[in-house]
Length: 282
Image (cartoon, rainbow, N blue to C red):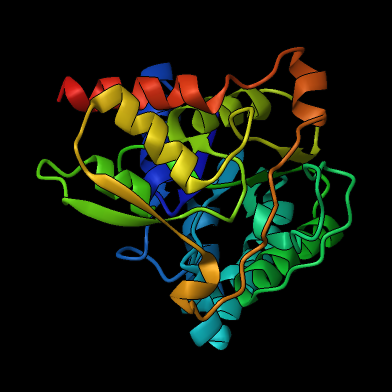
């Protein structure tokens, strides 16, 4: 098996490279420093030269507020580049993995979203990622659309992950307390993706750690595990006046992955405990 990875230096991409290396699987990873994925001609040259069996398309502008401020750039990278990757994947008959997001849902519900629920994105980020999904479904047969959420772990750019990796913690920080979602440990997500690409059970999958909560819940659990002294101050989303709207309640429920492999992803609290352990061990 040969694997081509976009966004190879990001949180998930770097974790995936470590996993593939450990498994003895050949791969080629590219990031923005090597290639502009919206340059169709260059992308085709690189992929056709390598001729992978699997394409892992992780590259995206995932900064939700940046997408809101620069919708044309978000569309070019998150949507049009995905169109180009879908076309080249079809040309070489490669399996295509596309990571999507819970931001394709509006959050106006009281229960988790499953794979069969109807998307209704309310932000530019959510809209561009959902359009990417639609292009893939229209163009490819051999695809895995992986919807995930709130990635944490080493190399994660989320506020919580960066805070936990600081050696000198702030005396106090404000933490959003009114958005509810699912948490995903980058190592668990990479392993789940590896499980999927070894199959031909194509389709849409929701992959996160089980359970859900707010970022305040997450950091309170981390505080319990790490015993840091930082005061966690609850803050509501509207107080921050952020450019992009956020889904209020958008945990992802999993039917397809659990049915295929006969098990649930482990609880986010257990995954967080492993992440904290890795940080404390250095």
